[in-house]
Every structure is written in C-alpha cells, then in structure tokens.
Image 1 (cartoon, rainbow, N blue to C red):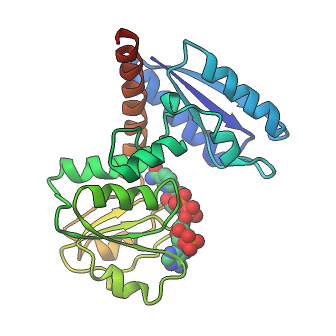
Image 2 (spheres, protein in one colour; image 1 turned 120 degrees about the vertical axis):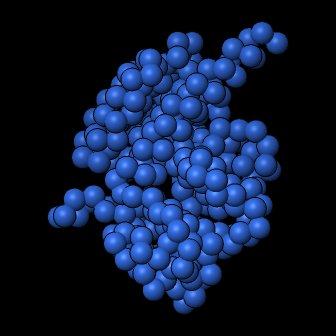
Image 3 (cartoon, rainbow, N blue to C red; image 1 turned 30 degrees about the vertical axis):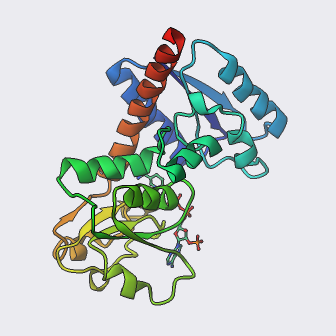
Length: 254
Ligand code: NDP
C-alpha cells in the first residue's frame, strides 16, 4: 500500500502534519512517498505532478497537504486527484456520495469524529448535533455525517446570530472554528458531548476551540487538544488509504 503526500512550500504546520502522517504510515507498514515542491511552483506544474501520481500504478492514495501557498488554486489542484486515489476524501465525487448517503471516501477529520462517537457509545440518532464551522473539509462533512447518522443537525458559522443560543441546545457539540478557547462554559448544556476539532498555535502551545478547563466541568465527555480529533484524523487517513487499496484490488478481480 502506498500513499503519496504532496507538500508545497514550507508552512510550519504543514511540515508537522506531513511528518505525523509519514510516521503513522511507517508504523503500520504503508509506504509513504513524500513529494516536496517549492512555494514558487506554477499551478500547471503542480497539476502535472498530481497527474503523474494519478497515473502511477504503484500509488494507491494521494494527499495534497493544504493550505497551498498564496497564488495557487486549491480547488483546481484537487480536481487532479481522481476519486479512486483521493485519500483525503475531498474530491467533488466523494463530496457527492456524502450528500447522497452512498459509499465513497469520507474526509478524515469528520470520519474520525464519527469513529470517536461510535467507540464511546454516543449514538447520534435523535440527538441534536450542533456544528460550529462550515468549511468544506470539516464543518460541512461533519454535519452531513451526523445527519446521515440520524441526528438533528444545526450548522453555525460567523454570520449566525446569538450563537450561544444554538450551542446551548446541543447534545453533541462539534467546534471547528479555528479560535482558541472560543466555546466557553456558558455556551454548553450540562451533560453534552463536546468534540473539539480546533488546532490553534498559541504562545502557551496547542489549544483547541473549546475552553477545556471550564467545559470539561459541564460536559459528559470532551475530546482533548492535542491528542483527540487530530490523532483520529491521522488514523482515518490510514484507513482511507487501506480502503482505496482494497477497492482497487476488488475492481481488478471484477
Ligand atoms: P476554516 O477557517 O475553513 O473554517 C472556520 C469556520 O468557523 C468557518 O465556517 C467560519 O464561518 C466559522 N467561524 C469563524 N469565526 C466564527 C465565529 N465568530 N462564530 C461562529 N463561527 C465562526 O477552518 P477549518 O474548518 O479548516 O478548521 C477549523 C479548526 O479545526 C482550525 O483550528 C483547524 O486548525 C482545525 N483543524 C483540525 C483538524 C484536525 O485534524 N483536528 C483538521 C482540520 C482542521 P464562515 O464560514 O462564516 O467564515
């Protein structure tokens, strides 16, 4: 099994993420092929690199580490990763399967959230799940997965009025905002399950989007940062690559 990880430029967070993904591959025996490209690469050259990996029989999954340096178009670049090698589950085709509730590759972070809930016996069915954040890689797919698991879902974002009114309604609260300590104790219903997706670099180290100290007193369960959703994201990336390899093998037999 082989995962190609493409990193463009020297974004410090991306360097750490790619290193962690590489380590996870090594630990479970997935071959990781790192493709490092300079920040000054042109859109065409980046797309040509991705096309080459797409055509390479030895490569089972491709991951383009985001964000890309300024001047490069992420959407256009991602379109060069075919669905059958889309390790991150970001391809339009995979987003479509999520909406239709059919089988496809799920984005790693929301898949990790669902795996965590399942592992700890939190069934979203009939619960009110509130997702703060509507990005295409976390908030929206997380909301759809919770909906597909029969939760009643509310999606909040920067234009939501009276945010705390909604978050206080949540049986399951997912914070994917990108602001350290944004969800405070008074925004959480006693007994809620709180999933903190945020990874924010602060002078005090990595912090989530949730005020952990205050909210852990109120919630029935809460994920830590670091060590919670971030770890699950890497696990689900490994699972996605294995799934892609198995699908390729099954298609070869047919
Ligand atoms: P984005 O910046 O793409 O999205 C942030 C979302 O938060 C947007 O939808 C935005 O609303 C919303 N938002 C911003 N400010 C407010 C506000 N004041 N009130 C309500 N909503 C607000 O971030 P991502 O989704 O990519 O990431 C979110 C966080 O999760 C980051 O900290 C990131 O580092 C982390 N992350 C962690 C991963 C992991 O593995 N644990 C993986 C990916 C991300 P609007 O759409 O209106 O602008």
